[in-house]
Structure formats: structure tokens, C-alpha cells
Image 1 (cartoon, one colour):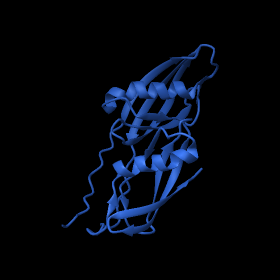
Image 2: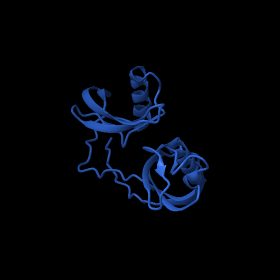
Image 3: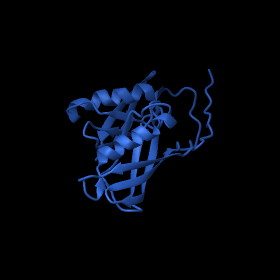
Image 4: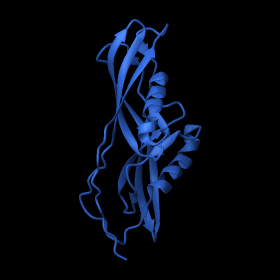
Length: 191
């Protein structure tokens, strides 16, 4: 069986939405959970369903021009970058735009030989979650890897993990050995 590596053309489609939040007594910021909720709600119909998760690094300042870079995982498991930009502030009301763009996949530099096994993303991601649950104290909200893990000793890949507290972390996956079609790997949770 001959396996070829096909590089699909990536169509980067930006999804945008406008949002208004009344701050009330919150002060000059929109709290992180409210921003995440609005991103999820506003982009759900454009993404083909409610995202699995939305993660923002902090609160959004209630100042015109304030920006926040968030990320989301679509219902289909695709990771997207989300830019949130404040367009106006009137009293306790903050208006902001939300723009989502798919993360582009790295371009492969060489083809993978047909005799090299790989761990498919849909198998790898839940396995990482399962293996890291004891050290995290709870199952992560999600794990997303950029591609299938090639079964070549020494190959590394970084996957994204978001824990139950909403903290985004990187997981370094390193292939340690390959026995037949079994790919063995180590995990290192990065800060």
C-alpha cells in the first residue's frame, strides 16, 4: 500500500460578530467569563455549532481600542484564534467586535514514508487527556493536537490543553519507540 501526503489548501475564513455588554457595577472591564460566553454565543451559528470551549487570558478592558486574544475549539475540534476589540464605550456599556480565524496548519517539509505508523489525532487527544488526568486532579476540558503523531522515535509535537480552571497549557509529546504499529510516547506538561 502506498500512502501519499496531500497538503490541502487552507482557506482562512475570518468570522466576525459584534457584541454589546452592559458593565453595570463591574467597573471598566468585561470579565473573562462574560467575554468567553459572548464569543461562544455570537460565533456558534457561524461555526456550525456551539464551540467545545473558548479560552481568554483575562478580562477585557472597557477602553476603546482595548484588545484581547482568545482561542476556541469548534464543535468539530478545530482550533481557532479569536481577536476581541473594543469599538466603543458609553457609560457602562462596552461594544466590541469578535473576529475568529482558523489556525493554519504547518506545511510539511517532507513526505512521510508509507511504512511509518501514526497515531491519529482522534485517538491521541483523548489518550493524552486520560494520561494527564491524575496529575491534573481532574480531566482537562479539552486537548487539541495540530496533526497526527508520526511514529518515528524522537519526533516531538506540542498539543494544547485547557484544564478545568480554564488555564491553557502546552503538552510536549515525544515518540520514544515504535514496535510494529504500536507508537510509544512520553508526555511533558509545560507551564
